[in-house]
Length: 405
Image 1 (tube, rainbow, N blue to C red):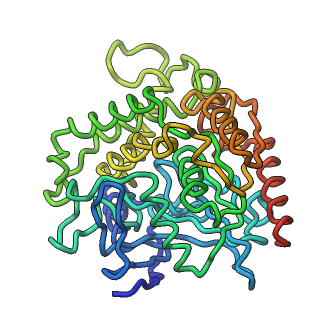
Image 2 (image 1 turned 90 degrees about the horizontal axis):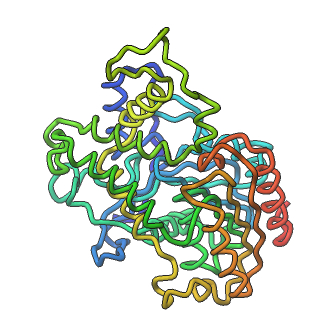
């Protein structure tokens, strides 16, 4: 089968769906997403870093804005762990706004009135790109743990195939935060001639031991849930909701800072006059985390959580270059702008500076900004005017260098 694009003509589910219907809607997205879809047949296999070959496979994606006649105004937006292709549109499962509507849209720093913006679900995800919840054509059942383990480089190879399919030779910019920032860095190493400008935000060139440890806690929470069924829960009609919710709760703490948690919740009690002397959610912060966990399991596949966190753990951009990060960027002409946030303890300013130093050593054009914020790692998704101004200035400058109005 040749690669084909499919755009479903079905309406998005109502945001008020109850949890069970939300889960069914999310599961339906795995094979038939509410977005554009490109399918790559057996003649377009994807060879993975593990040596496995993924074929056939598909990518769910969204585009915003219009591609110009020269095909020179395309910007690829890369999502973080829990994101998907719905960066700047209403989410078809939850009914909530897109995850990066603060940055992407008409008149915004990534201006869809000027630029053609592409946002795809990573392979290994669960919103339309082939992953463990997708149907395995060899069995007619969900892949589960039969799906091959992935790397960030594998995700980027698949994205490059999508960009090829869209007829775009070179991207004006690749932009992303956290795991999305890892993809941005990988793009500049794997396809340096195809990226005019790169904006890696709140990210690192490799995952730290501490971050791997947090991911392992989350994975073990999922796998300890008896409803995980050794990864076969979809085929057996169960769902490891409790384990995935705990994983999300633990991860969500790392996305915030102590000061932001204190500002939001302090030690305030949740809808009660005093302590209950029980293990109910006495404190607002406890209730908040439980809500985050419960909302996450309604839209995200547990096995995808395992696969995507493992891909982040394996990420080490210098590993193929003798452990010298500067060698990964040798000879690059891509323009870089790195951004970190002072209260981000998941991907610290030191992580960004290490990349900046490597780029300097490689002679690459690079700028760097550390933004004062108490919002923690999630600051790149929130209302940060200084960040927006930097993003707008960098992207506009890159556009001018290649004559994009």
